[in-house]
Image (tube, rainbow, N blue to C red; front, side, top):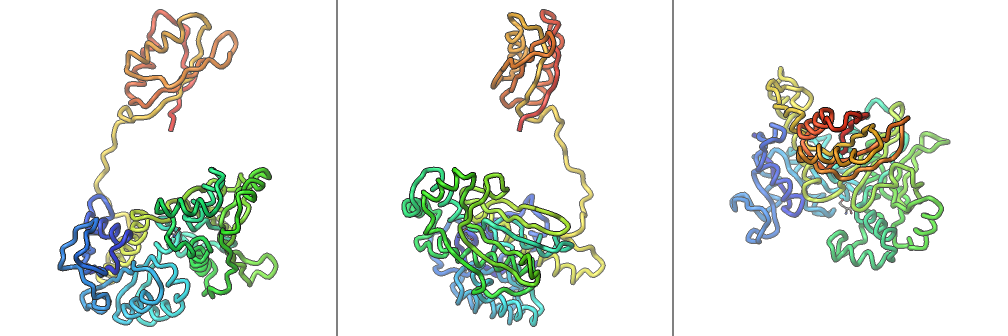
Length: 432
Ligand code: HSE
């Protein structure tokens, strides 16, 4: 068992604890993680999650120096206290998992130097893009590539505000107030709407993609306060949508310099990032020789961010296990399964169907099709007679969700229907 000291039991801390305490069906390594101590501000407060009171403590320094703790998960946010707790934990030989992009973007040099010296890992999958895997892909899966450009929608609050301004036609201030009321924007929205959060995140991505440290002040940063509905409307008429983009790219001319910027940007409507709306995030990576690859998903929230936190915990667990079991395969790389999964027969699949029939164009044909489907309990969503192929009419049916077994029986019944012998099934496709 590896002991986890969790700092912070807010939204993401709660999500992380829920995963650790309910390992069934997840990666088996989660069972090797013990939620040993949890640092909170107030012990007696009513919480969404019930934890044994003896593991709760207000002494966060005590957690990061606890000799029993193997991994510290920092989820308190902010910079100064987080920085000092992380450094103290590193000094005490703990591995670190953090979702805190601000502390990494601004104090990463100091933190990673200390971690290198202490021989511990600082893993940050949850710091960028919430639940979207982007840090590990940049470190591992894309390692064969030269990264040319990263373009991200990496702040959900501003993406929500810009999407609402476009959809509803309301001004920035009104949408921000509504977003604050709904809990999509913080009471103090500066970090998000002025682009600081996106700048933190792009500095982290750029550092991994371009193999070097980034000085936070080198990022050109502009937020979305100046974007007006008029701009959004004109942009739309010109075939663009406005997004807060964070971009890191190699200078086309010099190649040894980076361009780093965050700012509201017109995006052509057919660009892959143009349809990333609301609180969703996406990161488009352009790489040689891979080409373009886009990572898309929920950029914040309890479950999504906790998913990324726990993925880092699993990586560290696997490494610690690997050190102990020298001759065993690395648990995160091997496929050790031996049992087979139970796969359901296709007839039990529940889906909608599209079916095209070729049939005589005369009274009763659609009625008979309807009867055959109805007799098998297959409900029809739409029927259209669109065109002709030679002498035959073409009738297209889309069903409601049914089992594939029911649908196949209905098609059998249509084949066997004596009253009408000129119905042919031209094609059958499943509808998502
Ligand atoms: N405040 C961030 C956002 C979420 O709006 O995307 C946490 O990174």
